[in-house]
Length: 149
Ligand code: DQA
Image 1 (cartoon, rainbow, N blue to C red):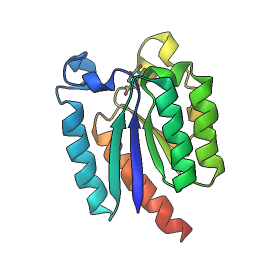
Image 2 (cartoon, rainbow, N blue to C red; image 1 turned 120 degrees about the vertical axis):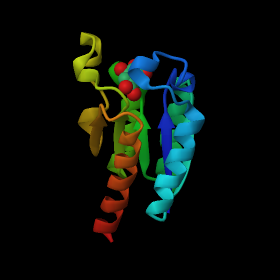
Image 3 (cartoon, rainbow, N blue to C red; image 1 turned 90 degrees about the vertical axis):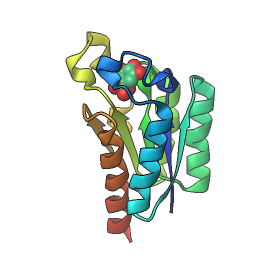
Image 4 (cartoon, protein in one colour; image 1 turned 90 degrees about the horizontal axis):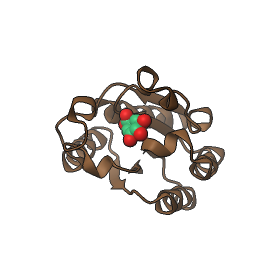
């Protein structure tokens, strides 16, 4: 009953970084919220963040090996990391849900944010809902896991 929430580069700067886009709350606040939301569905959550592509890729491998569903905010890796895409597809190929989350709505921002290399292989994508998007992602995983049983 474990899930992992993985946050990519610069999300450790939440609260400080462009608060008009990402809000005033920090990563720790997001972590506390996710723990509470997961608990509502009887799930245990591990909220991680890294600026290091190799580390984020390693967490995808670990999710496959431990059979852990993933909530992934790939941050800027979204737009160009084929390495992360190839790691993330192993999660969904293993039959595990992987929900892509973006705090902002990348479709309404700079042109380079309009394409995601992750979306085509994600189970689903939630954008533009602020931190609440993580709740929707956790809830989606709970629903998917229930439907599979
Ligand atoms: C983001 C959107 C990305 O385009 C950006 O690079 C981020 C955060 C979001 O949560 O809205 O770092 O993934």
